[in-house]
Length: 85
Image (tube, rainbow, N blue to C red; front, side, top):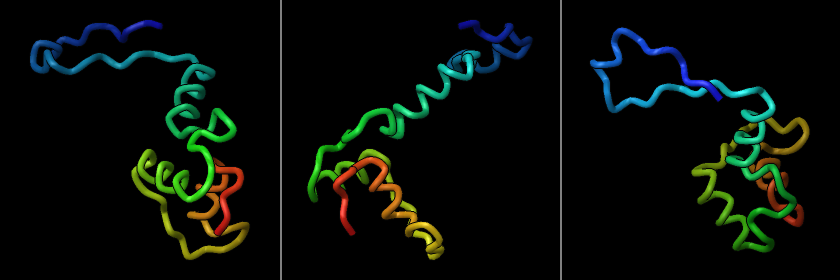
């Protein structure tokens, strides 16, 4: 991983870290891990898993579109395989 080149303005914001350049596979792994989509049952099962998933994610979007599944059910089901509405 490489840091971006120094900027002439770095002295104006010394507390800001420089962005890292990531290879696409590494960025994908980080994103999947943050969403807990890299393992089968990251929050366990049952009603407690639903609460844990929402607390970790910070929110569950409730969408009025119902094409495949309502989005809030889809979001929880992809992370809690035995999730039921």
